[in-house]
Structures are given as structure tokens and as C-alpha cells.
Length: 601
Image (cartoon, rainbow, N blue to C red; front, side, top):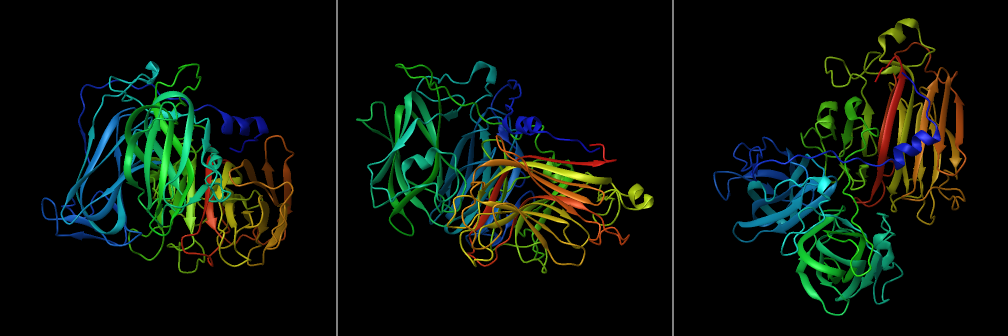
């Protein structure tokens, strides 16, 4: 069934409130089951990324996990109770990082030594009922053993507010606190402190100050119980940052919260530093450079805590914790995912099935739920690809109308794919749908900034794919010297060359800054629609006129009865293979809706 979407509907998808589910109470705290927690059955229950191996040098038993390189990691998804405090523990020898991905936020800790040492991470599950546990490379080779996950508090009913700390100042339920302002002593390089609280995760929106002892201070506007910070470090996946954190009620007298802290060096997402339990209005981070140089650079920061009501005239209530994802936003039942890892060792990127996605699959780097409920897709330049014939990497959904019924082939004119209404009656009866529309709401967070001028800054965010070619590829492109990005459409006739249509700005590699362009972090929507021979692509933005491009496909070679089946794709398909290996593209999707005549979902 195809539907028509208007701006008010799209706005409701984007701006609608995220409702929290009612959470009941359980009896007493208990351990969470982790399959094969000591690796005695090799990698059973875990998904590992090379370079990884099973070692006989173990803490207990006969086996342990071994990670030997910067891309090495392993993970497992487990069920948890919402709004509950947990402690994750593992034993590490050498160097390594363990953690948990909770609603898109990474909570992690690093450790290890010449012999096995216990490393622990504390976190609250918030609204999540499934989380991903992981271990990954630290600053050198590491071995991991005996994972455990234990409840340390009973669930808290959100109806009680969850904002009153128990004796001693510890929050029973943490929420994001509103930061009123950020400041430093003025010695930044032009990347000012306000960039760390603007919600923009692009590299250009950061605070940077060179030298040991440089400080950035966050003001909550009112006194609160602060128990954690979440920080996105600049180049956080390639270097370790060193820091202290102090808190203050008045901005004059300071108490130590974290001494000799360091980031993981392996994550470009939020990293959690917790355990403060401090009554404070001000939180100060002092940087001591990083493992590569003396720069201190933070892209984004959040503070978590409770009891931030009207104190001494302050009016700064906690932000409700996010839920994942909005129920009307993204139904993964009819998609599978291509993700840029090769866990099965077949030389190609892995495909995650519809059933695994519905069961809650996430990858801590390339596919995960963000704190705002959006679904993040990220693809680096240097990573496994879908086949030896593919030039670029992707983190991208592929439409699967079979909805998990693996007795239906992925290819061909069958119930997994759709056809145009100009096809024969036999083809239309055999297909899963007729004609189609893909409507997505998203923001592009980051594009590549290195590589050849013909490829830098470009990413495909939506497609129609046929048997071999693509009737529609929708590009976003922002050049390094421009503050705004362009949108353009490529139509590829069957066996032919691309026909390119500039929609917003120019696709040129030397384009000037588009006057009506779309900035990184700016939310917009697109529609890719086919009815018979006509392809229509529409870009929709609040407060602006729609931008529409139509293409007559009558002579494009897709209507000649040669098994030309169709499927939509959405996510990020990196269109740069010439830049730095760790350069990447990233987008956050808030809604992906696919509809077809004859497809009643």
C-alpha cells in the first residue's frame, strides 16, 4: 500500500515526543546471563572483529579472548531491565577496553597490566531493555576473561520522577542535565568552548586548546547532583586523551572528581566517565594533551545527574532520558544491513538479517542508536566492502519485502522485491509490491574531508537499486571549504551512463558554497517515488519550499521484461576511497518509511 506524506506528517515524525514505557519493579538484584562469558567455547555467543583470537593464557579456565590490533573487538547483546544500575566487570591482561552500548551511548573503562586485573564499568540502563557489551583494543595487545554483569540497584519507576538522590548524593536514576554555558580562558585556537554543547558532532564543531593544563568549564546554571560526564573526543578513535575532572558549587573552590583520566583511544562516539556523585554547579575538565601531541580537543560534552530543580533561584530541570527509536520512525522488519566489518572472514562486509535487526543488533562504531533516538550509520574509507567489484564502503539498509522469510530468495522478481506498474501482469503478480516510495528524515553528521577533489565530501543517502544498475542515487555533498552541502540526483539507465540532476547547490568538485544548502547536522527529509515510468525525488525542509526533480524513465531500459526487479536502500554509502583510511561519512536517520501498492505493511 502506497501512502501520501505531507509536511505536517513529516514534522510529526521528526518533532514528536518520545514516550517512555511504564516500568515495573522486580524483587532483588541479580546477575545477567552472558553467554560464554569466559570464552571456554571459543567465540560462541560473541561477534568478533579481527585481529582477534582465542588464547590459552587465561585468568580462569583454559581460554581467554585476545585482541592484537587497533580494529580488533568483540561484542554480545544481552537483555537488561530498564532504569536499573549495572556494573560490568572483566579481567584484562596487557591492555584493553571493556564497555556497554546503552541506547547508542558508550560506557567504557580501560585497564590491564602484566597480570590479569579487574576492570569495571558502572552505568544505568535508562529506557533500554537490550544493550551491547564489548571488549576492544586498548594501547597494546590485550587478553580478556570472565565477563560479568550485575544489577546494583532495583529498577526505578519513571513515574516517580527518578530525580531525588539517596543519602550520600548518588542518583538512583541519571538524566541528562542542561548545560547553560561553556567557557575557557580564551587560549583556544578559534574552536571555542560553546562548540562542545551545540549538539553538532562534526569535527569542525569542537573546542581545541594547545598545552598541558588547559581547561574548559561547564555551567549548569543551578546546583545539581552530577554523577557522570559523556565526552566525544576529537580523533577519539585514533588517540588517547589525558584529563582530570573537578566540580564546584561556587566556581571558586574545586573538588576532584576524576584524577588521571584517559579516553579509550578507540571510540569516535560518546565515552562515559562516571562515579562523581558530586553536588555542583560547575564541572571543569583539565586536559594534559593526548598520545599524539599536546592538543586538548573535545567535540561534544554532556553531564548526567539528578535533583536539579529550583535551587537558589535556578530553574534547570533534567532532560528526560531518550528512548530508542520512535515507534513510528524505523521498522527494521523489512530491511537487512550491510555493515563495514568482516566477522565471518569471507573477505566481504557482513550482512545482518532482518531478524537480527529486529532482535536489536547494533555495532558500537558503524550502526547504533544515538542518545536522541536516531539511528546512526557510519562508514570509514578503509573497511570491508560488499564484494570485490565494489569500490566503496557502506553502512546501509537493503529493502527486504520478504520480512525474514528466508525461503524467498533475495534476488529476482519475487516477493522480496518490487516492480514498476508498467511491467507485465505476470511480473506484477509475482513481485512483492508495485511502484514505490521511500520517505526518510535524517541529518548528515559528517562527510570526508580528505582525498581527491572529485570524491571528497560526498555520500549516497538513498537509492533505488535494480538488478545491476541504480535508477536513483541521492547524494549529499559538502566540500571542505564550504559551510553548506548540496543535494543531487543520479539516474543510471539500464547499462548506460549516469544522468545527473542538481537539486540544491551544485555537484561540481569546485562548487561555491550553496546559498540554500544544507548544513551538517541540519535535519531534512527526502522522498524517492516511482509511479510507472516517472521517477520523482523531493527534498523537504521546515519553513522552506520543497525542491522537486522528475525523471522520465520511459527510455531507461527498465521496462523491457528482462528480470529488472527493484529495491530501496537507505543509510550511508561512502563515495570516497582516496582519503585517509580513518576518514568517514556519518548520518543519523529518524524515520525510514517504504511503501508499495500491493504491499500491506
